[in-house]
Structure formats: structure tokens, C-alpha cells
Length: 132
View 1 (tube, one colour):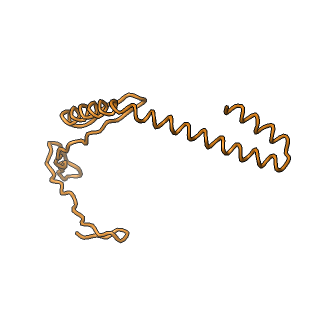
View 2 (view 1 turned 180 degrees about the vertical axis):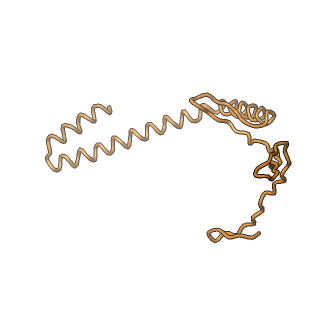
View 3 (view 1 turned 90 degrees about the horizontal axis):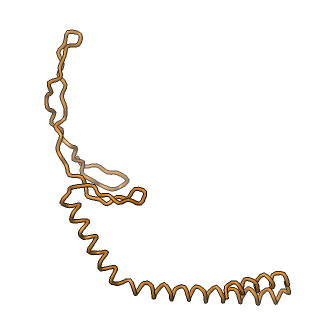
């Protein structure tokens, strides 16, 4: 069956459930009834790594879980070999950040001196000493 939702066409294929008769039956107001259950189709649970309160655990097919754990260990080992690069980059970022803060402070100090606001000048000079 072809359907449209918010302008997007899609094909609707409903799940066909085959009922299976069970041993549960009885009589009600003179009529016999039997309970039918849908036949369960086993499906595999997707494999995922979950974390609850800091503790990792895995769900899914045990073979796929084992593969996921091994691939994660392999990726952790390769990322450990590249640890030196991000630290250097982090140091450069820290230095750039401090340079920008100092420039901003100098600009604010010049503006305060132009206005002649002595209290603001004292506060900005205190802030400059803290940064240094």
C-alpha cells in the first residue's frame, strides 16, 4: 500500500502475524473459545555498548559483542600512539587564548583611561596582575 506523510511517499508493508492455537480454551455463555497467540519470529538484538553510572556493558549477539570489544581495544591502541599531537595542539590553544585575553584587557584599559574612570582602571590593573 502506497502512503504519503508530510509530502514523503513510502510503501506500507504491514507485518503479517500467523496465529498459533494454544492449549488454553474454555466455555463462555455456552460457546467454546480457544486462545490464539501470534507466532513469535525471533529477531536479533542490535549490538551496542552502553554505559550506566560509568560502568560499560554490552548488549546483543555474543559474537558481535566480542568483535566490538576487540575493535575498540585496537582503536584505543592506535589512538594511544597519537597522544603527543593533541597535547601540543592544546598548548598552542592555551597560549592563543591567553594572548586574546591580554589584548581584550589592554583594549578595555585604554577605554577606561580615555573616560578617566579611576575605579575601573584599578579593577582592570588588578585583573592584569592576576593573569600575569
